[in-house]
Length: 336
Ligand code: GDP
Ligand code: MG
Image (tube, rainbow, N blue to C red):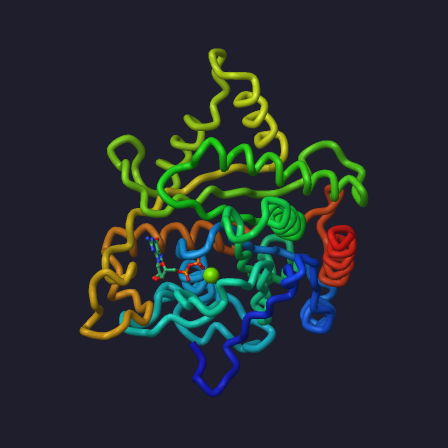
């Protein structure tokens, strides 16, 4: 990583709900990001995580940022990567920075928070130029926000991401799936206003299960997650019709569904046990070994240059300036 004198990037709460429940958008930072001369003509990859508060979303994303800074140049660091990408986790006692994690102060920020540094990549095989944006979506499945606000935020997040990670704790619950259908229908309705499509509107959805406690049934990681999700989403003849239809709907809405099971990170990460007699700073020496191993595999799987998924509207890849128009368009739609 470059020296600390450089701006690492910062998080911008670009879309969200104000106290009056009205949707807000911050036009200036969005313009600065997507109309940037080195972004506006690049194809967009939009990586997003969504879920309830206090489930380790920002913590996870900050390790994703570490991976990204070690592998890709960015707007703020055009000469990156300076370090050896295979060592992307960094020093074992390096404090974790990026999206603010653990803090209680931003509890009432509901909405989409973007990282204002954008990562740049050229696909070797095709020469395609990519701009990758990272976002943290706060407040879904949270009983502090109304179900309507929750589904609007999920819909907006789904509409503007190409890789959506749905962060859940423990297991997938049936009511979460039904809720997912409701929110996805909302997003489809919004998409049809501009895309007019009935088919699969959205790209990749990954269920990320934290604190997985049943490794004897399904092993941790991506393969175990695949089996778990298949088992959970299987349509069975004896199922009630509404349980069947929700499963069919989810299958028909996304190009690719996946799942990953992460073990519990250990008592230091959850704050139960002191870290070197201090407050835990997020460094990876505080993680349980098996959690760390799975985290490394998962992030490499998600953000590997070979696997990046383009944002599509109407089946076409979108460039930075078009993406900017879409974000504004959807914002206006949800504002009313
Ligand atoms: P967010 O509100 O979902 O963004 O959660 P944060 O990333 O701010 O993390 C909230 C707390 O959960 C912090 O104390 C983290 O150290 C801790 N944490 C991080 N990862 C995990 C995990 O996988 N499981 C559990 N139980 N806690 C975690
Ligand atoms: Mg957070």
